[in-house]
Amino acid sequence: MKKFIEVISEEMKAAFAAAGYEASYGKVTVSNRPDLCEYQCNGAMAGAKAYKKAPIMIAEDVAARLQDSAVFSSVEAVAPGFLNLKLKESFVLSYVEDMMKETKFGVNEPEKPQTIVVDYGGPNVAKPLHVGHLRPAIIGESIKRIARFAGHKVIGDVHLGDWGLPMGQIITELAVRKPELPYFDEAFEGEYPVEPPFTISELEEIYPFASGKCKTDEEYKSKALLATAQLQSGRRGYRALWKHILDVSVNDLKKNYEKLDVHFDLWMGESDVDDLIPPMVEKMKADGHAYISSGALVVDVKEDTDKKELPPCIILKSDGAANYETTDLATIIQRERDFAPNAIIYVVDKRQELHFQQVFRCARKTGLVRDDVALEFIGFGTMNGKDGKPFKTRDGGVLRLEYLLSQISEEMYGKISENKELPEAEAKKTAGMIALAAVKYGDLSNQAAKDYIFDTERFTSFEGDTGPYILYTMVRIKSILAKYAQGGGNLDALKRLAPETKAEKELLMNLAGFNAMIEEAFTERAPHKVCAYIYNLANVFNSFYHSTKILSEENEEKKQSYIALLKDTLAVLDSCIDLLGFEAPERM
Ligand code: ARG
Image 1 (cartoon, protein in one colour):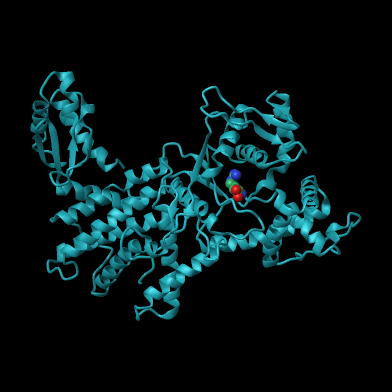
Image 2 (tube, protein in one colour):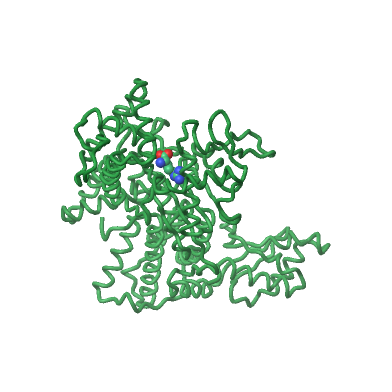
């Protein structure tokens, strides 16, 4: 379906053409003087020079052709040459009626659906999820959902950090604590135990302990490096132990992402591309791209136009080990092989920008991807506490994601349990839903690249630009619709009337902007556009609600039309919050 603004522009363009001017001057935009008009066209001003005519004359010419327009109820030429526009109520209504009949409210299927890999989440095995993992999960999930809604084939990959030094550190520490385990006995040829030799809480204690010890104990550190190298080169006992680490940890990660309503299609990790590394390295050498520099194997990625010199991309460290660049490059090969994607989108901390610049350039230079594959880095900013510093617990530690979510759920529970009608179990569940909305909306309503302040008080408020406000608005609509149905109204056979009030028309016009908004949110990878849209929609709805008698409206036809409008608004809000990754309760 054509976008609302396109339909409006077409009407204006036809009028320019009919009056003897270039049609392209008829581009219409939303009014920047809403006190005077709803839309405007500045084409007469732009065309004045070309036609050597006063802009007001052109504007008047055009306005004259639009007196019987089906789209505009008023077209005013005003000095020095603006066209101020108001839309016909019947036109606005028919657009919204048409869009509501479509499955995706007027969002067209793309002519050529793209295949897009979204690399997000990026947790590291054996480390619990903490607040720092919130942003990639929330933003990546939303970008994935928006792209999918826009009609593309999207694959979300968690890209686990499961192959580096942390693994060697854990192995080293386990060897100290439980030397009797068969994994450390190189002569052992039997079957290793099926049960892991640790629980998730043990693992979460062992990792930071070992990593801390590496900082102070040189001998321990070299053991850990050796264990890492041996693991990567296939030492049997270490591989078996590593498999346990992976299983225990992934199991726990899955539970936590589930709580966030974040779902990955692929649970691949750095380790999965291990066997692609040797042939990749060989090819880079053979093609003359990779060379030895201070012992390491590197590929130059700097370009003449760089303002700052970009260091070479290190393919193998001087000890021959693979590093973060290596696994990311090999993962590009794997994605190219498995999906031949049109784009790979990385949702990662913006402090990793340099790394990705090197990786992308290296991948292009060495021909790992076809030239037209977009490699996109969406770097997100830091989530700060109210003091403007990275979010920490009161005693300065990193806050686990689980705790953050349960704290906010409790707070929401406190707020909604004032409503005595909600049974305890429902109140608990609802509190969880609102908490998730608070956290996700709080994050997504900011542009991803910006740092933002995680302000629990503000995010959990039922007023203002917050998730709970959006949910509150939706619940308000749901309750009116439920009452209408209880009173014998049929929600499936609602006839609409053209809007009579400004508030009603405004609401319809906002609904009509849905498909254009989705297109922008998709092409710009910008969930914050969805937030801005629903915040505005909720505001416009609430002013309609406050200025209109709905259930007590005596004119049955009018009442039906209002109810239809409510139903439409709810449906659009519902699909928007789904794109943001949360849901609305029935009551709150
Ligand atoms: N595990 C990485 C980290 O903790 C993030 C992974 C991001 N994705 C990627 N393809 N490098 O920094």
